[in-house]
Length: 394
Image 1: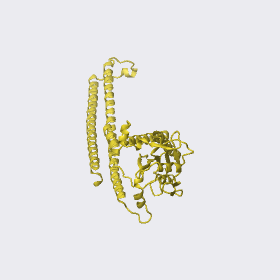
Image 2 (image 1 turned 135 degrees about the vertical axis):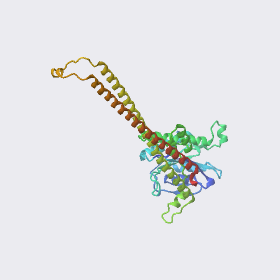
Image 3 (image 1 turned 30 degrees about the horizontal axis):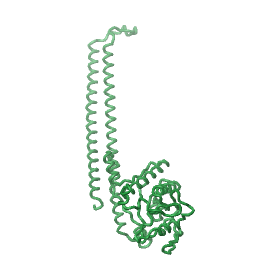
Image 4 (image 1 turned 180 degrees about the vertical axis):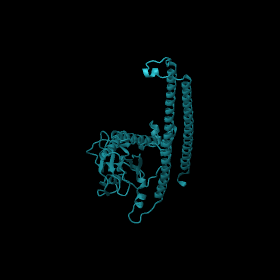
């Protein structure tokens, strides 16, 4: 199913990184870093089926080639700890086609370009051979300065300090990032809905979604959201873990495996909880069905009594429409007929009392079973809560 992932980080000189090198790697390009005199050639790498530079309105596409754009970004900064680019990494839904994933990434890049006035270099990556086959994702490398027709301008709003942003009437930087996360979730869900997909993503934390489900009384959804977030392995640890010869188990890898094991344990409890809830619902449906049948029987008995009473009151005293043979037959003894009616009524009452006793016993057994299922459900909910409290330490 589709998952939410959007992360952002700066490309900073203080970490020894270059915007030119980052752009070359993410777009499978060959770019010359004029400031450092280095040639970055990643044209032989695989898994990059699409790349494109998205410019804001008013920028000259003929002027802003990829190499010119990122060299300009490097030369625009003089500080040794300057941020020369900002990367947005997004997960693309497996449920969409390759063309739909491309259009989704491009439309989001256009929104970022218009929102901040920056250029966005898009590189779509396919899942690696050794990794998760569902890991379709894109790297969006954005300039930290406004891109004009043929020159770079001031820093974009998201790169300003919180003090500067507040002085301009803007919120804090983390609030800006949260808004972008919400925007990506909204655009992804729109794309999924357009293709008739039922799955949706949510940019909020698991804790926030879990609290909402509990407030709504949705026990199953709350239990499904009661899982530990997985930490990102990172490319260095991932490369060490996936080595064909002598793979190395890293500390991050051990942490990720422990989290996944704990989540798998919680999934097992969730499956059992769902079974108990289903049993409870079936039991409640059976009780309702029994009540409906009982009401129908009671109505039928009332009608029968009414008809029987009407028949008794309306029975004619004289013989009407009797055949000659019946007329010549001896008359019935009234006392004998009364005894037969009395015996019939007694037998009916006995059968009715027997039916009521059997019905009461069946309802009592059903109620006992329902109570037992309710106790089992409460016990499983307590186990889920204890498991959540223990975390992976157990």
